[in-house]
Image 1 (tube, rainbow, N blue to C red):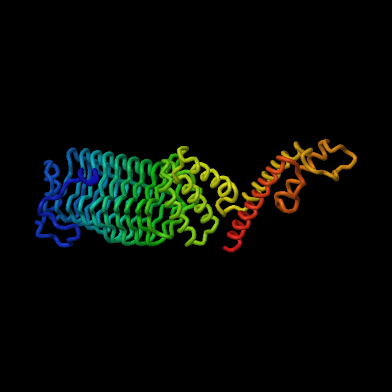
Image 2 (cartoon, helix red, strand yellow):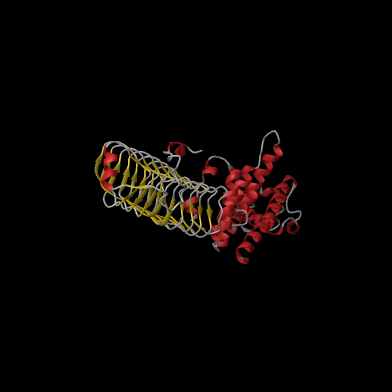
Length: 433
């Protein structure tokens, strides 16, 4: 059980289920009598109160248990202690003016109908979990200095969170939104946990700033999830482990270098998360982004393979994987890499051949008026020989070298054959799609 659930005020034993719409036999209590109980430091229990107005300053805790509150108006109030609603049904609550709570604020196991909570400032923890919200819910221009929990909250309506600041952890885990959840211009200074939550329609976070963890692990997005408008802090990390959905809209530059599993060296997990992104980009026909996700997938797949000097062939295999597939062609996503690598190979072997030009049978010199060992002939012979070996292999220039100089000639011919194959694969992948 999460820590925040343990901190919640449990309703009285006779509290009805949160989905109960009836009054449950509660006694009628006037707003004045309810305020008198609060002034005496007593909780309001098992009552039905209409049009209660909470104004001014309250020195002690204000607690409602198993109550029905019809159109309560909370505004222009300061609560020195806690403000707690446990097992209540709250119909059309209104926060008409700024409200300050120096203790904790809790909506535990309640039913809230058409809730509009605005300009609420909470110094302690805030709990909105285990509550059913109906008829649209809005949280606007609120300030939370401590942890905020919406653990297992259920929104049977559209939910909007606008212009709020979460200084501590924002725990939105196991939340269920039957419609959509829209976050607008919110600031999350702590971790934002959305693990295991479900959104049946759109999830949007335009203009929101995430300073630390954005955890979408095991989240289920049945429609579009708009994250391209998210602002990423310098220490922001992202988790997508076992997330479900094909319409996650997020840019590669928002993910690059921020995936929590990759930064922690958990490359097997990172591989699966990049695979999830690749699937999303493919479904959206964003092929350039799909190539990026596939490349990161293959890089983490290579790093996840165990390699040890006790088994040197594993080190050699990883090195060849890196040289030929990663550097060579970006795992088939970047044909330009094959061209660049070919240029490096040709120039490198050309330099070797130029230094050892005496080891070649050179009946004709490119510059007849100059000696074979002059710089001009060395450079031109080295370059032409290297290009010929790289493109034609051994068959076209057999017996042009003497002695051990045939070894680099054979190596370059093999490398040329491999690079041509890698280039064709990468280029074909680009063109066919």
